[in-house]
Length: 120
Image (cartoon, rainbow, N blue to C red; front, side, top):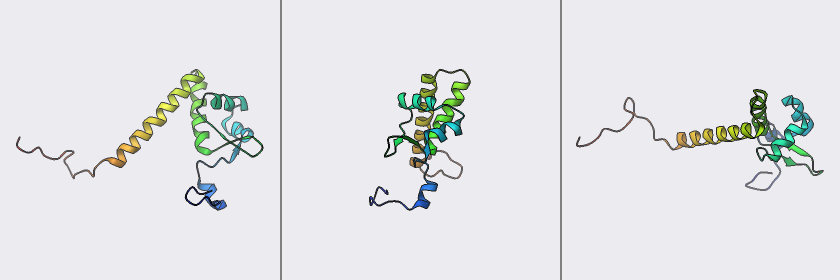
């Protein structure tokens, strides 16, 4: 559904949507080279909260799978799951802050990073 109109989205829109829960737990685990238990542990750690199908099955989006893949890399390097989840959360928050700063940054002058000081 589109948030503005509460009407179902066209199927073609779902292919481009990073947040559409297209992957079952089994398929997601296969793509990550992980077990379903690993994905459940990310849900329990509140890093990823998958949507549920009408039958109650977990469904994952591509953006969630990217987070899970990053956690998997850190765990494979010997980091604990809680620490890996915290690092990924902080990395995600940092990227959001950088994106927000870039949106709010005034246009840069040609060769002066700051306007000239007056009376100095």
